[in-house]
Amino acid sequence: MITIKIGYNQDPTRAMQKLKNKLIQEGLFQELKRRRFYAKPSLKRRLKREEAAKQRVKDYRKAVARARKEEQDDWY
Image (cartoon, rainbow, N blue to C red; front, side, top):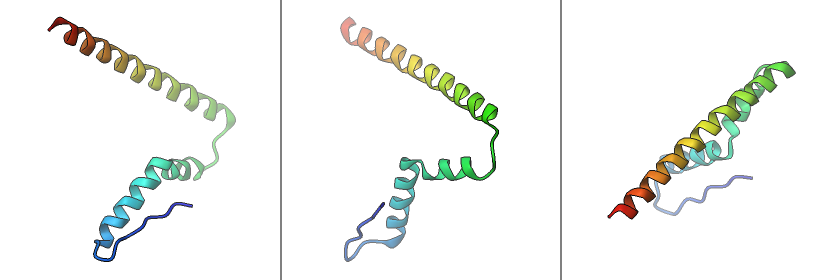
């Protein structure tokens, strides 16, 4: 269960924003969006494959950026 504690003199809108951020972090909104309509198994496999490809590209770009940063740090 997700809980947000609010202090005595804190803004309730800030608490709502914290709750929303926690729900996003947990993936609840993404899960609700995914379950809204029926998806055929073939579509699920295709989406999973596409998501994995996107993640590989992200990881590769992060690795390249990290390598460049280390190379710059060694240069100086």
